[in-house]
Image 1 (cartoon, rainbow, N blue to C red):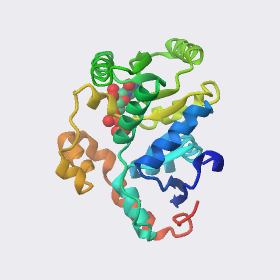
Image 2 (cartoon, rainbow, N blue to C red; image 1 turned 120 degrees about the vertical axis):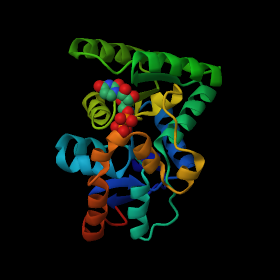
Image 3 (cartoon, rainbow, N blue to C red; image 1 turned 90 degrees about the horizontal axis):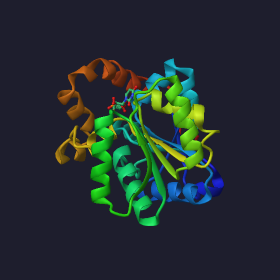
Length: 255
Ligand code: UDP
């Protein structure tokens, strides 16, 4: 993280991956500073599945490690921090950070672009967000199912429009690789990979009820409501905890 902008944020290291020790206010303040300076950047909302995928995918690993702000999203990340005696950092779900960032953008007049999910989802999401934040300035929104030609066109449009923030919902690893690929081209835009958030903002997918979230069990709710996730989560999660327990060299208090 840039020391200049990151003020006093510290970074821990989990299995060789940086994690910023931030709460909601720090994270939004960091993003706001990036937007004001138009320096561009990549925000990752990190969970154990991403780290384990990164272990098998060098490009994903590079994308995660080179991100400018890495938010502790998954409860597994918090457990790993606890193992390092870092107890003051709470889980910061990426979707909540992104919602706060959207409201900040609406308040401060920053321009927003959305890329990802199905066309229907994007249309409903944009309508919902305009209702919720009447001052929101959405200058680009399109679905995440496109071929190479359309991709060139999308990049051209975004490079011309220079949105302050681009939310990308293509799933992991696609969205993080996409951001890595275009970080230099879209060099004044802060890009945030948001996974399935557009589906939630379009009311197509429900977030876990409060009680699941309170106890860090959002992952379990997603598992029981989308059993197809089982093969993605297991044995990934247990393996992550075993590696964290054994790998003291790459899991430490400072990055
Ligand atoms: N998606 C997309 N284009 C693709 C693949 C996926 O736009 O080529 C969208 C998909 O419609 C969904 C999101 O990416 O809205 C992925 O959601 P998921 O919950 O799977 O995200 P993850 O668990 O990877 O964060």
